[in-house]
Image (cartoon, rainbow, N blue to C red; front, top):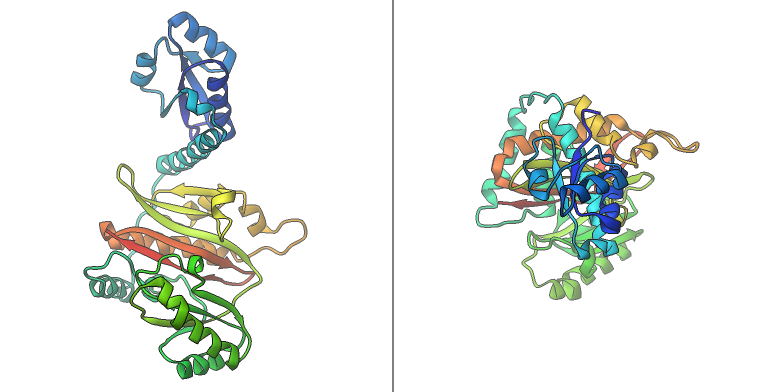
Length: 342
C-alpha cells in the first residue's frame, strides 16, 4: 500500500523480532533488515519476513526506500520500550499517510475569528500559557463550542451564575499558570445547590488556591455536561515536521489507551474524517453494539476549526490540548483547554 511506512531494522534475533512485530502491528512493512555481515543480513531478512536484506547497517541507513530505521539494542527488549516502539511506529505511519495525501487548501477565516486570536495572543504578552477562559474563547471563535459558563470573582457572583446556567454545575479555579487543575483538586463536580456552590467557591479560593501558589483570575462556573464520550483534540509543534494535529480517545485514560492519530494541517472535511477513522474510538462514534451514533458533523467541524486556528496563529502557538472534548449525539463541547505559546 502507498501509505504503508517502510521500516528498516538493524539487528537480528529475538530483539529484532520484537521490532518487526511492532512495525507490523502498527500497520507498517519491514522492508529491509541488516545484521553484522551480508550473510547474516540475508538470514535475518528471511527469518523476520523482510522484503529484502540490506547488506550492512550503513547500507540500510543510506537506502532511499526506507522511511524509518529501528536500531535494536539490549534495552529494546524492555517491555515498556517495546510498547513505545509500537506506539511511535503507529504515530509515524498515521502522520506519514496524511502527509502524503493531497493537501486541503486553507479556508479563509472569518475576520472576527482572526481578530479574537490576535487580541488574546496580544493580551498574553510575556506569558507562555493561556488561561482556560482565554483558550476556550479562542476555540469558540473558530467554531469549537464550550459549555454554558461564567467567570466569577465572589461567592455571590458564583451562586448567581449557577442559577442562571442551571444545576448541576462545575466549579474550577482559573489561572494561566494552572495547567493541570485536577492534580491539585482545583475542579469540583456535581454542585446541585447554591449551598454547594458557596462551599466549593470557599474551598477553591482558600486551601486549594493556597496550594496552587498562582495568581488567580477567578473561578469558572460551568454547566455540567454528560452523556457522551471523551475525546482529545490537539496540536503539537514538532521541530522537524511543524504543526501536527492530534485526535483520539481522551479523558484521564489518554495515556493508558494511546488511541490517537496524527495529521498535518490544513484539514478539510475529507482529511478530518480520515483522521477520525484512523482511531479505534471511531467505532464508538459511528455507533457500536446498539448504541446510537454520535455527532460526526460536530467533531469534523471542530477538527477543521482547530486546523484553521493553527494555520492563522502560525508559529506563535506551540501546543493546544483540548481534553476532554465531549462528543454527544447532537453536539460537541470543549470541557477543558490548554494552550502554550512559543
